[in-house]
Length: 305
Image (cartoon, rainbow, N blue to C red; front, side, top):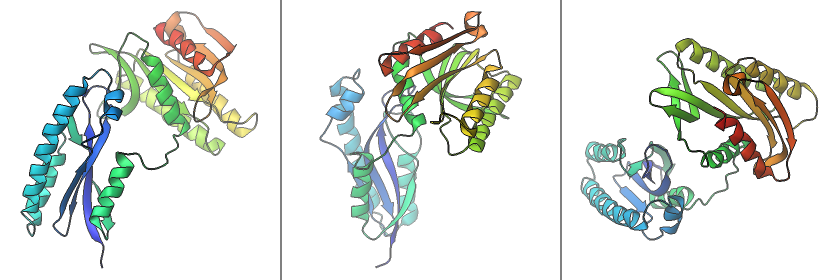
């Protein structure tokens, strides 16, 4: 039996468009044998309502029920057009078209499967039930930690792309007041395989900063929260220090350095406050009792802006 080519997309629930946070709810799949499949989580709701704890549970359940009803109707319509691939493809594309709504679909993916239903179930378990092992990278874990820290600040950070038609730099945390970019934060890991990769990654970001400044789209304050390579000496540590020094060489950039593993920050943090933010250069090295205490040190740095 030859493999069947299937296009699929992940159904996402995203009630707050500005935060970019979403939860996966289901899968739709269009196969080249004319079969259009869908599977949506229609029973469990605790995972969603706990994640979006400010959203009334009734709003989610009612909206999901209405959406699933319409989705089933659309899939049934597509299956009535087996043998008309252009019609089915048009329906599929219409479903996944980007739109500002609570329920939306990811970009499509493609796979080959002998059993499309089994493939659909596998995708559903992976994306909705998270039936796979994913170890967050140090940079992903650091970004999650920063997300938690920023919740205690009385300001709103969003993911944005700064720049113009020539240079575009994507940053996960940007604080903006009107059209004015007050501050941007970039968690970054330099725990890489060798010194050359550390230099390459650092040079890339230095170039981003330089071009943002030339374009006039640089933030007032740029903060890097960085992870050092896990070595005590050698070329990797030397490369890391050189990059940090170059970042610190600009009065509008500060590199907050910390050592961490995949789950938490270690007990020692270094804080470097830029002249731009607090009018005087200060350096602190603290030994903390609890890793999470480091959050308060960074918050003091951020609040200074």
